[in-house]
Image (cartoon, rainbow, N blue to C red; front, top):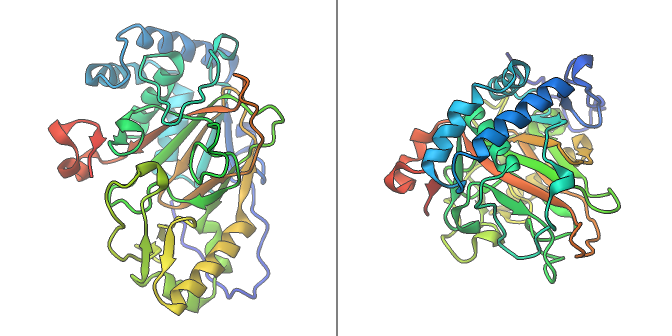
Length: 348
C-alpha cells in the first residue's frame, strides 16, 4: 500500500478523481468506494443484529459492547473483509459507503427533534454501528458531546437551522471530526435511517490525498508549520479550550494526515491564513457528494478525509432526515488517560 503523491504546482491541471474501487463494488467517480451487500448477506446481518439487540437494553453497557465484539465475528465474511481492508487502507478518497444494511426503515419511529438526541436503548441500527466499530477498532465517545453516548442521532432540530453542527440544516462546512482534540476519532460512521424529504442532503467528503497535488509547495510548507488554532465545535458547549497550536498537515508529507475544521480553525500568521484558503479551494475541487438513503453506512477516515453536508429543508413532521453516528478509535490504549475506568468515553 502506498499513497505517496507526486506533488505538482497549484497551476498544474488536476486529474479528475478516478473511481477507486472495483466494478464489483459499484464504484463511481462521484461517490468513491461503494460496497453493496448481497440480499443474503443483508439478511444474515439482520439476524445477527437482532440477536445482539436482545442481549441488553442499554447501548452504553460495556457488557453489550463486549457482546458486539463477539457478534462481529458472526457477520458475513464479505462484509468483514471489506471493513478490515478499509481499516488497513482507506484508499485515495478515504471514505467508503456500504449499501443495503437492514435498518428496518418501515418500522422506525418518528425522527427525533430534540437537541442532543442519542440512542441509549439497544436497537438493530445501534447493533450495526457498534459491531462495525468493533471491526474497525473500538467504539468511543466524548463526555462533553451528546453526554458521551456511543450512538448519537444526527437530526435537524427546530430553531437550530443555521447551527454549524449535527442539529443544523444549512451547508455544514468541511471538517475533520473533533479536530481540536488530541484523540479525535480515527473513523466516523454515519448510518442513514431515513433520508430528507427532497433527497438533496448530500454527505460531502474530500481527501487530502487527492487535494495535495493541487497545492503549491509554499502552501504545503505553511500547512506543515504549527501556526493554526482550532476551537472545540459548538456541540461541545463551553467545555475545554482550543488545542495547542498545531499544523494542518502532519506526518509523512508525501501522504500526510490532515487536521482542520473550516468553521473552527484559524491561521495564526498571514501565511497560514493564505494556506488555509488555498487548501479549502483544493478540497472543494476534489470533493465528492453522495446522497445517503436508508441502509447506507458511510465510513470516513478521519486522518485523511474531511466531511460536511449540503443544505436541506426540514419539515419537522416526524419523517425528516435521520442519521445515527458513532466514532471509532483504532488504538484505544493511546487515549487511556482520557477514559475514566478504562471505559469507552473520553472526558476532557
